[in-house]
Length: 389
Image 1 (cartoon, rainbow, N blue to C red):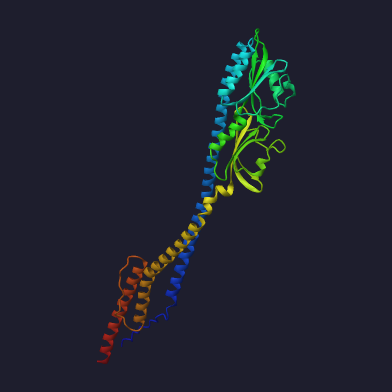
Image 2: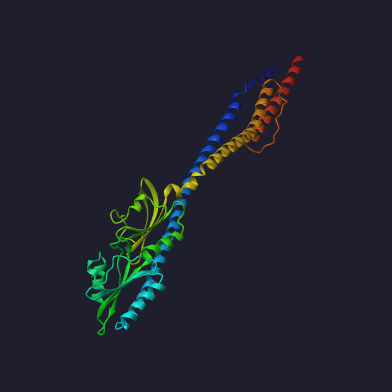
């Protein structure tokens, strides 16, 4: 007598697991995409700040160097013109009328000089002329340059002692005008300096404003030229009040130990990106600045597009999660339905084997199990028939 073979397969009830998988897949995708998008946007934003600051620094450096080179070029031309005038004055020492004509002609056609002073070796002012359109200052014939503000007397004494021309550092005249003078010795018959020619350059007064205005630093940017003590002698653009006050009573601290400095300065409660460029002679500084918030303003305009990009990434992540869930959970549902039918006795049921991945392997394993169950059931039916006979 052969024992009876029984099939006892309990099918899972309900559909909580597939629904749970869908929720887990969706949550995983949203978190992953959200974190990845946020990280990418943060990297782009922080990297954008660095790029914007580098661009502003590069632009400001270009402006600073352009101003400095322009001024240096003017000083170089001033040297050549001043030495040429000195030689002509030396040759016409015996003709005072000719000397006055030379001074007038020089200032009439010169583009860099605002005045010319001629001193005796002892310091007495012999003659002086102002360029057309320049109001005459404090000068009086017969006065001594020893009464002038420093550093002019010291530079004049050094030029007389050495016989070598020199620029003065920028200084303020009694009339309050910032001035840079080129002092040239005039030699006598024995080659020893017997006179001094002082030429004041436009480079630190009216003309410099024209030059730096033409460079257009932008609506919020500014360009300043300061003397070696940090006193502002020319400003253009939109300089902060602190720079406007940087005259004789409140000079600005400069990096005296380096030819150029890239720094952040706080002016009137705001942060500015600033380039400081020193002239080769050290007699003046060019400062170009831009408020940091203005420099980084283009990044602020990217906030809305960044948020929209983040929202789009989350929507794409949700769509991808739904499509992946459908691709994964479809075969899972078929497998669960097959298990349920076999558990109800339909051992002939098979599920499609359409995939080559783990889900396809599960479908093949299920069909193999169902096939064995069907074969066992056929054998059991045969023995049951035999028993009845």
